[in-house]
Amino acid sequence: MKNKIFLTLFVLIFLSCPSKPEIPDENIETEQAAANTHTITFAAVGDNLFHVSLIRSAQMADGTYDFSSLYTEIKPIIQKADLAFINQETVMAGTSFGYSGYPTFNSPQILAHNLVDAGFDIMNLANNHAMDMGRNGLYATLDFIDTIPELTVIGARKSGESARIISKNNITLGFLSYTFSLNGIALPSDNPNLVSMIDRPVMTSEMNALRPLCDFLIVSIHWGAEYLLEPDNFQRDMARFIAEHDVDLIIGHHPHVLQRMEMINLPDGRKTLCYFSLGNFASHQRERERIIGGMIVLTFTKTVGQDSTGQEHTVLSIDDAGMLPVITHYDRRFENTKIYPFYSYTQETMNDHGLLNFERGLSFEFFFGVLNRLNTKIYMHNPLQ
Image (cartoon, rainbow, N blue to C red; front, side):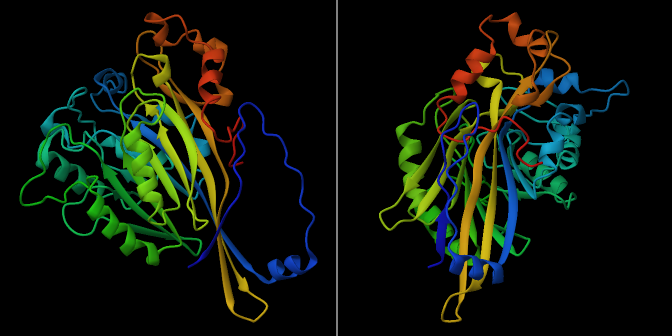
């Protein structure tokens, strides 16, 4: 089994406190100097959820759509990551299906190009809205995304395997994705694997098959109860089950609010980093808990060297793991929607938030209270500079 080392995650809310430096061992320094170290910087965000008002606000004078302005404030950070993940909560089936919001969503296809331009590489489609436009709507979405080579889809496929392996910088990342629900819509009887569902025997088989083929194994999972601020029993139990299959990172989404991080420690010393919910990335939801989301930022590190006997020795670690909070802003007309990194969001901008049409309790004090319970390093600056 590969030697896996996870750095300790410190609970930091407003400022990061420097840790006591370790005294280097001369022999270790010599070995590290001869070693070959590779890294992937990785970012992941939660639900990209397009209500009708958000779609309308992006319509141009000629009737076309452009969502690029939504991501302009956060784009410089995403583009700095070697790989970036997003849970795309809505299908993009094309004009023939009609654009729609809650409860059955269909978003303009230009959105996929806007996401690539913003810096995203990996798009999850295993969520409860994957079948909103039926089999043909999901097929149309997959066919369209197939024309965009920069995007890798996980969680849904017309045929073939559900696992995806991405290799970059001499590191291989394995991805699997599952959802708890399709909102009561059945998968087609002749294509029951169109969307990856939470099913323990299937998950066990897939995780066990993918684990030997990658350096790091990542599971994206759509789960939990909407708007619940703490993970429920099902999430905690499922996280433990996934961790027991030697998964390195769990990316959770669906509750539309932020939930805490947990480092799951197994008896044999293995560890799994689990973010139960990253909340919303983009949406026009109208509650203060739902306009603050999180971006996971971390580094996958692989160091290959030789031990004292001359045998090749590989050390894998997840370093600098933390969360960059983000705020989805829309004005009082439900226009000018933008996603801001928390550190650049101002009181002046907040004073024009459309949420103030519905409630008065919007404040930085509230946001800090949310961040205070997340059990992870909080970045109050651009962590990828």
